[in-house]
Length: 104
Figure (cartoon, rainbow, N blue to C red):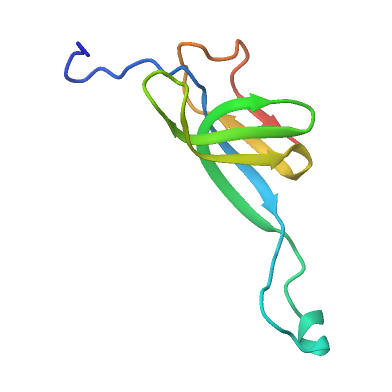
């Protein structure tokens, strides 16, 4: 690729920060009384990556992709009902027309 030293290539996918509620899983055996004292509030997760798809049911996020934009690394699918907030990070070549923040 022919790039200037300090220039960045335009991204095919919009970088975003997703704040979402994850469910809690506590493995192993637990006595009944101990099981009732396990933290029941959701865990808040901050995920940063590239937006691959977003519809009424889910958001698909990837932490990386190849030069052609056809292979993706570490793909996460987050149900829309678990999303608290989405921040669009910067302006990209193919960014949505409305940038900003989406809040639940």
